[in-house]
Image 1 (tube, rainbow, N blue to C red):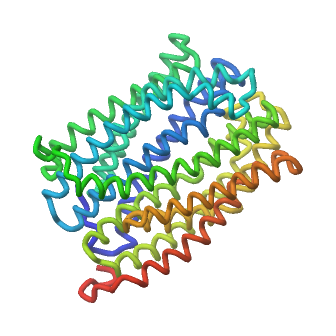
Image 2 (image 1 turned 90 degrees about the horizontal axis):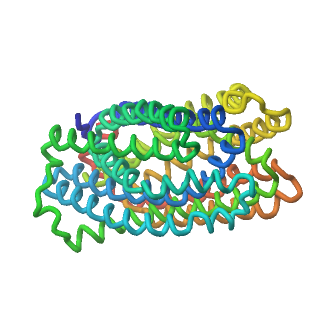
Image 3 (image 1 turned 90 degrees about the vertical axis):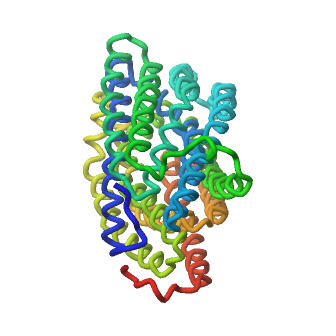
Length: 450
């Protein structure tokens, strides 16, 4: 069901929307982990490391897609918050059309540059073929990823985070089944893991589309809504492109980080790959909160309820503190077991490196959580340009650490690159948020908690 986030208690609203997103994120991580687990168990540890090498490159393209579609949905949430059904329909049609154009351009660019970029990243020669076989499938199937992201984002813009969860669980289970069939049954190797992801996302996105058009009359677009309106296109691109570039800017920093990591050898890459899976699982509550903040602030910004935005951000920070602690405890105390889950024959060196990475990330999770609260809140308030600057700060800090500290500190330098980037971007976003929020006239007719 839709949820009007311009009414009711801010803390309760955030939790109600966030929890399904969090559960969905965990399921998504779990099926990504299954990919890794099956590859590591049925192929070899080099194949696992090869898939891990593609993480930064995939983030560059898929992160752009996630930011773009999330930005389009911010406009949908603002229209919904303003209670303009016709504008909601036009926003949905515009988002779908622009997403289709982006799919064509990104698919061609990513497929043509995949191997050159892997070489540029100094991917070890014993890993590059595994990496390419996996990532090229993901890139050729990028349309499924775009389709899945835009549909899920549109539904969440209405305050419904349960429906995307249901279809994500369906996609997760389908992905697991296809993993076993393609990799273990058909012996497709790492390419099988890629195809399992693409097919499961495509089927789930199609099913979710049919459901949302049946369930929500406000989303039933007609042909006339697909007539591109200059005002709508510019507004959607004005929010979507900065959010997309913000992800890609961050991804460039991750690519530099991965390049520096690749110089440390296969053992370091393997440890980082396994530890990153654990780290991703530990931080999903924070990312779920970030998505929720964008929807919440988007609806209230559209309604002009600026007092509620401030109340929501304060509630979000409280929620972030709790989940930061839980995530840190998981990374520190479950890290070794998780590494052995992915790499049963992990050497003492790999285990030590993986735990070193997790300990440093956990110590700075609070900065990541605060960063996500303020960044997504500003995005919901159509301040995406500001988040691009924050992304540039993250890029500069991550690149600086990767280039200057990996030499003298080795793997510890890699482990420090994320935390230092988080700190730099967080300080900037906190200052900007409080500068921006003071400029808005508080709506005296809107109570702080509804």
